[in-house]
Amino acid sequence: MRPNTLTARVRPAPARRRRRLAGALAALLAVAPGCTDMYDQPRYEAYEASPLFADGASSRPLVVGTVPRDDVRNLPAVEDRELLLTGLRDGLPSRTAPFPVDRAVLERGRQRYDVFCAPCHSPTGDGRGVIVQRGFTPPPKYTEQRLVDAPLGHFFQVITHGHGAMYSFAARVAPQDRWAIAAYIRALQLSQDAKAAELPQEDQSRLEEAAK
Ligand code: HEC
Image 1 (cartoon, rainbow, N blue to C red):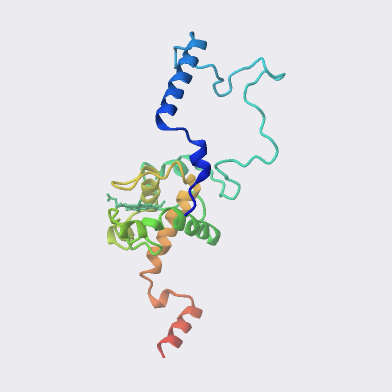
Image 2: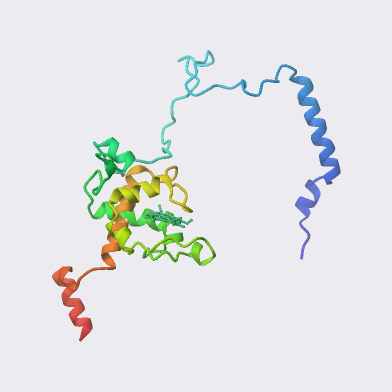
């Protein structure tokens, strides 16, 4: 195999590197004698005033085309902020979502579920995702009676705060998406305990065809 000439040439020997680092630190301390208070650092806090810019603000306006980190453009608008953010209605986990759940919401829920939850819970929610197959604590099946009976707000709260071995997803999944995922878990539960008579006529006919 060819030796990695680039790293071999660029990286100095460890001892030399240590000496250089020590030298650099000493030089830094020498030129910054007043810089002993690590708490009060020479930078602007968010929204601090600044004489540097004509408008007097240190925070600069967003450039055209900036993409928000929490991209809420496609999420449903919600009036009941309390319910949206806590999962509670009248102090109890809510039985319903803070916005109507339609096909688009369920599809969004499935997409987010497959990204964030399926690695442990599996795409069907049986708790045998790939991370679990490699040794992580197995979660319960969503079809356990306790979880079938659980209100939607319980799923929202589990996603928001974490639950036992499962960590919180609050920093990764926006509240509207947590509700969409909660609704999708309900759909997963229904899909695995559906009575033939509850299916649309079209699907019932297909079942009868397949049984022949
Ligand atoms: C890293 C693995 C992992 C991921 C990813 C994960 N979970 Fe879990 N989940 C668990 C484990 C483990 C438990 C069981 C925790 C316990 O009881 O200690 C659990 C439990 C649950 C429960 C049952 C709570 C109860 O009342 O028993 C729900 C609902 C749930 N998770 C939903 C989700 C959703 C929704 C997502 C995605 C946003 C998700 N989980 C992502 C591992 C995970």
